Image (cartoon, rainbow, N blue to C red):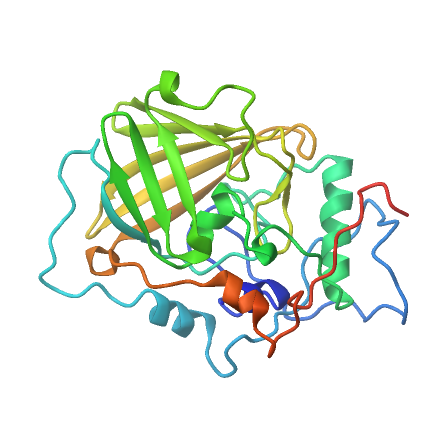
Length: 304
């Protein structure tokens, strides 16, 4: 799904829970003139992406989600009752959000002028058929929030000193250090950043910073700078079924006037703990698809 998803976002539809993106509009602006380029975006530009192309024609977003996350089979074990034990297999059980148009309180993200212009340029590039490339299209780790958002399972392994999240898609891995003394040094940089967590009651509070490059929070291009601080509050909940609730707060003065938060849920899925193969590299080398997946390099922000 990886490269096709990036080149033609939105077959999965909109997420169903609070704090995640709304659906793309049914209509859209008239097509731009031939040769138009995504520069000089006015401050009041529409930030909504163009109508989605279908990755699976005839298959609605809800039906696709039902295929990726079918009902939990009966008779499977529950997770540990210990709220500090998060081990096991989990999967995002809301429809994939291709653009975070609202926070968890249904407010629009608080963009700075720079953030608004950057996202509007990315939306416009997509609308004229020239979507920009990104880390995931190059089989690089796509960042914490995007990695978790995809509707593929991850397995969480836990020890006294750290948690390891192993994701099916993009060969992803996220390490959460519970002992700050064992985390990489403060000047260490990586695509996923450095995540350090501590318990506050039954909630694991994880702070991620130290990104190697600016990252995208979603497939459309909601931005986060390399200096962004991402805080996630993770707790295990039972409300008829077991799930993880993750509230993510993005603190990034480069692109946002103040911190803002999203909420996602991840269902307990012990039947998915054996992860299927995901070969991004072969997909890039597949001669039956464009080598760049239809994406183009993104120019510098100050390009005109």
